[in-house]
Amino acid sequence: MRIQVTRTGGFAGIVRQAEIDTADRTDAPHVHALAREAVAGGLRAPSYGVPDGFHYEITVDGRSVYCADPKLTDSQRELVSLVLREGA
Image (cartoon, rainbow, N blue to C red; front, side, top):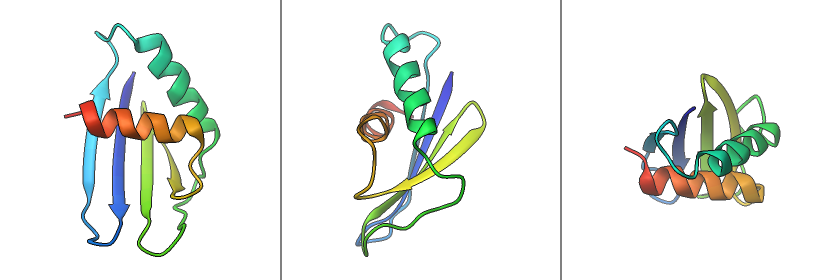
């Protein structure tokens, strides 16, 4: 499973993007579950939360959903954090 996260917005407006491939990960079942839940809780169109908040596009195997701070689900928050921290 290929998971990509793009984060935009924030005070500085800097775009950050990262991607992981779960093929060789030992925690792949957990990441797959997070991805399924994150996609299920996402919106089909970009959404905007609070001023200067972050906006996210989560793409899982080519399917994109959108979410924004402060209304991320727990799964979205964990997945975004994981991909931005460990992704290339």
